[in-house]
Length: 434
Image (cartoon, rainbow, N blue to C red; front, side, top):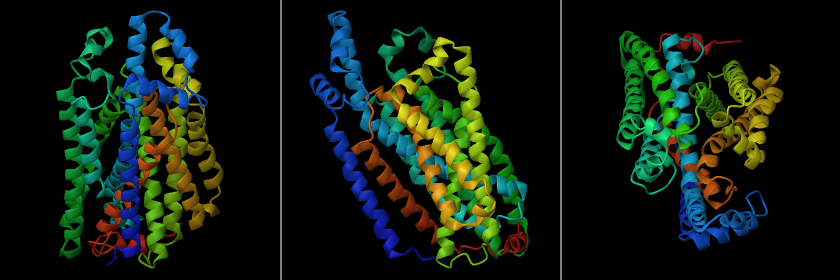
């Protein structure tokens, strides 16, 4: 059985502690008044935001416009630590959710190559419990108006916006939280029950637990496909409620799926390097790397399909989504495309490279960083506008959730043997060769 080493445990706790201090510092440094907000804009003006002269020019249109603009600016800068926290919280939760989908697919397909990796997947999906709860708490605090991440939650905004009034039957705080609770409850319930059946199968004298796990996994995938799409509309697309895309659910799915598979590969390589997965061979790593490569191409296809159709049609309420990102987020926007498409294409196209562990880890780091930027690009423009920069809040949030993720995942891995005993396909998995 795997033992959660003290070095890894202490390292993850240090990451959490440093990250938490930084997160607190980010909230403390957030402006409390309009004057403080203007001072922060002036201090960061050299990078990418509008200049103070531009703000002054806008203010010349009248005191009412000036006051509204200043209030909007204040909300953007107050949103920054919240948005950074939300991006990191969602990103790490999405990794666990992507692994859960991959795990359910392997179960439902009765795949013969992957049973040796099931305990790794079950360990990673354990993070859904703390990760999902934290995301839900952030959503709850948004409903309680502790931040301004979701503009449609502000009654004053809705009162002056006919489009939001038309969506109020769906975009209302109570229904929003109910949906979130149902989705998280369903994902966590499947994970816990499937894990329980997986462990019981080791001690069973027949395959009844395996068959039951197969059935509930097939049923769960139906729930997952529906809930994941709605979740992407609710938790990400609704931060910019005037914009919509019929591809968005698939787009977010591709991002979480490739991120999840990447983490499976990286954790598997780490455990194998410690001699803890002796039966996992290069062909297993090769198959995981193939998924990393293939889903990266799939993500690019969805990204380009969404971008090309919206940009070509040039409908104002649709194209503004990309205009704001290209104008104000050039580096993260175009950098994300390079990291999520160009790098995986170059690093993982060669079949031999997919069997080189350090090469797969290198590609995995680039892919994970790229998909963090993907979520960053989806959330930040609507919540902080052009007042973005990678600072204390962003770095600290990533450190905290990375530490929590590592701690929770490896703690879960230490609670059961890393190799299933009585899975009907375990021998096929042990002798798998590509």
